Length: 212
View 1 (tube, one colour):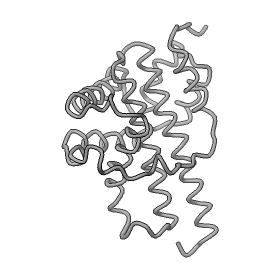
View 2 (tube, helix red, strand yellow):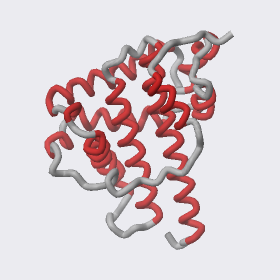
View 3 (tube, one colour):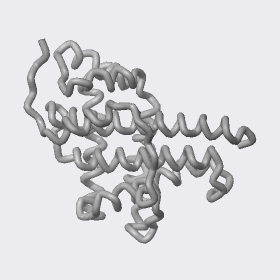
């Protein structure tokens, strides 16, 4: 039988929404350039490592569908909890916890230095989007040409930026208890689903404009 956990209703709503596969379309406010907002953070080593490790974390996810499925009823059974770390490519829950703990420590440092929590959600997402876009920039010779490849990377950077902003809201929670696990799971699932939509849109674009 599933173990009943009492946790934030907002997290339940987020997870329920994220587990539904749907098109992710970045809007203009999410992809707006906000270099005027905390430009110094874009060269901060802690900020850059946070983003780089986040992308590596998602690239190493082994069973994304299992992550989505296990949270489909907003609960986590004891057997599911034992298998849960392996979905991310980790051998144990403490190792998975360590990743989110390190993420939380970096976020807290950046928050204390730059006041991220005082920013609006849109500013947070745009800030992280700019950082991820720079990480992806090595794959684009020239930005602004509206190619299929550029649209894909903008979409992926936007999805990652929004996910990190969600993780930012989880940073104060204990990652060893259910509320913390569920909060970070909602951000992970959001990025999985949104990234899939980005790739789907990219494939459709390539079919429409094959020379790109």
